[in-house]
Length: 459
Image (cartoon, rainbow, N blue to C red):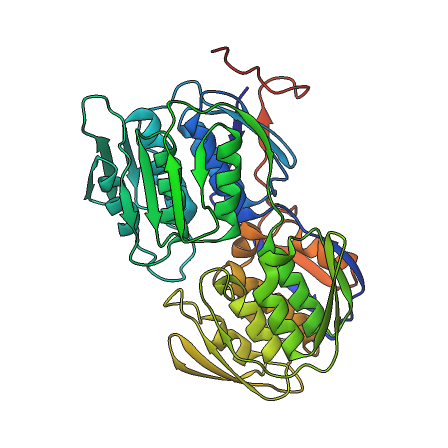
C-alpha cells in the first residue's frame, strides 16, 4: 500500500496573531522528535522488510521525507503518528530535485541508498537558511568506505567501485562533530563488509535513537552517544517496530514559553538528560524545575540574565538559541550569546529589536542582550524554524498584539504548536490568504483500506 503526499506550490498561511501579556497554566504533551523521525524514516531504506515507526510527528518535513521514500520505491502506510514503510526494490532514478531541495535532512538518504543499491544520484540538499552546512564530510566518509563520489552541477553521484558492489568498513575521523555525517555513515556502514570506526562522532540523542532502531533491525552498533562509534557490518537487516523519542527541542521551547510568561507548566514526556544544558540555564536564570515521573515541572520566578554559548550535545543546543534570546530580552541584566554551530543564525535579532528588545549584534555569531521591562507587539518575521518559535514566545510576553509571519518554517518542526499553547491559556489566531481558509496540510491519500499495513515480503 502506498501513500501520496501532496506538497503545495503556495503557502496560504498569512500570519499568526499572538495576544500579549499572557499567563499560561497546565500541561503540554511533547511530540516525537522531528530530527530523529526524519533519519529513522531514511533508515527504513536499509531493509526489504516492513518497518513500523510510532510517535512520528505530523509535520511538513515528515511529509517531504515520506515523498522522498516513495520516490525511492518505498511503499508507505500512514495513519496519524504511525508510519509503516517497506521497500522491496529501490529505484535507481535520481531523487527529485524539488523534494531534496525542500529538506536538508534528505541528504542522509545517500547512506542507505548507496548501501542497498551500490549507486545513487542525489541533488545537493536545501532546507532553511541558517548557514552553509556543507556536505563534504559525508562525501569524504563515503569515499573512505569504498565509494567513488563526484559532485557535478549540483548532483552528487556515488558508486561502489569494487566487484561485489559492497561498501568496505574503514576508520573515519571527522574534522568536527556533524550530526548528519555521523548518521549517514552509521547507516551506510551497517551493511558494509567488516568494521567501521567513527572518531569524533556527534553524540546527539537522535544518533542514539538511530543506533537503537538499527540494532533492533539486526545491526551491530556500539558507542552511539559517545565520540567513538563502532559498526560491525552485517549482510542484511530485518524489519522492526520502533517508537521515536520525545522531541527535546520542542520540550525546551515550551519550557522557555513558561519562563518568558512567568507561568508554571508541566511538560511531558521528556528524557531528562536530553535537556540537562537547558535545565541548568533555566535554573541559573531564576526558574525552579522538578523532574516528576516522565515529565518536568517549571515554576519561574524573577528572571535574571545568563550567558549562552551553543555547542554540540551535551552542550546548549543551537536550536534553542533564538527562543532563549527572546527570554533573555525580558531578563534583568545583560547576557552574551555566542552561536558556535551555524554562521548565519542571528537573523532573529533584528526582529526582536522591532518589538523593543535591546540587542547589539557584535558580529554574525555574537550578540549582547540587555533585558528590558517591556516588549511591544508588532509584525515580525520568523526566517527559520527556531526563530519563528522565538517570535511567538516574544509575542506572548509583549504588550498588545503581535503578527508573526514565516509560519511555513514553524510548521516544519512543531506539531500542533498553536493548539498546544492555546490549551494552556495562550491567545493565538492563524490567518490565511487566498481562497482556501483552511490550514494547509499534506494528506496521505490511501489507495486501499486503512485497516492494516501491507504484508511484509517473505524472505
